[in-house]
Length: 68
Image (cartoon, rainbow, N blue to C red; front, side, top):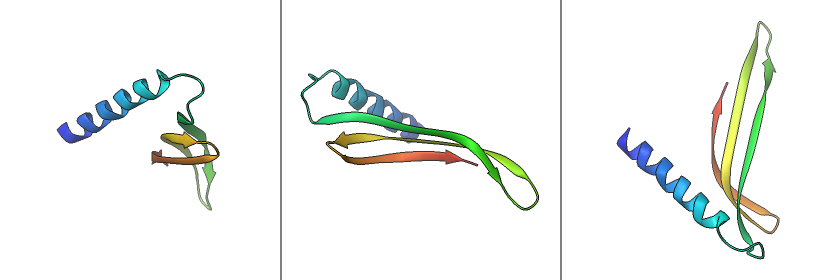
């Protein structure tokens, strides 16, 4: 639990430093968030997905969390 909170704090710190740069920087923080429903044979369930990372030109690298 302590390492998880430390990891989240580090991500928030990096987010703040990346957004504080000038607009001409090629590295930018980006977030992709999805919400939806998944239909199976017997039931329909709710799903959420969040991917946060760094965008460089047209390339994106990040880590994500999903719930379904």
